[in-house]
Length: 201
View 1 (tube, rainbow, N blue to C red):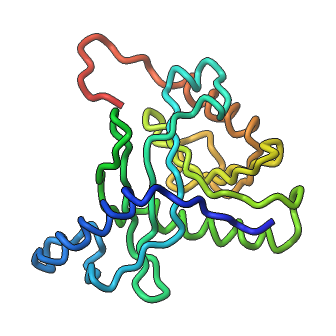
View 2: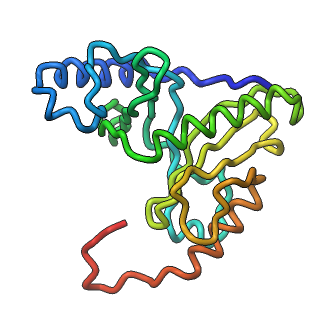
View 3: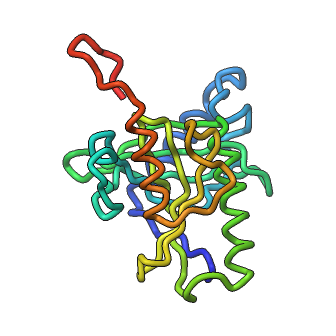
């Protein structure tokens, strides 16, 4: 069951390249989002679609077919080393827009999860279908996971990306129902926002 990254629309690729070119004109001390790497030396790798679930959806027991595709994420490699990630979004008109560069902990945990997935695939687990790596994001719970999707769907696997919220096991390989149930339990411990809450989520 090899990993089979999906192919994003060329507009998303172009947005990342454009912003890497812009970043290349910035002083080195302003490239913290790229972990100080030289933008011209970075290669885009393992594109994966980003899906989001809202807090209410999780509480109501939504399935992953209700997750909303919001954009694309790319790992950025300098040589053999992943140093950062780039993310784009799809706007209301269906156009690609650049969102951010990031070199935080989710970059490392994504790379590690992809390595785990490759090992799992090499062991012959699953139905034999290819896995498409995706990211599932629940912003209100600060939960991100690598979602390995197959056409059969019943063999989908979810690997949480540390740091994980309390109640989610960082080293566990979840089935989709088990992961959604764990998220639902976590969501039950989140206080509802008051009318004066302006922090968003």
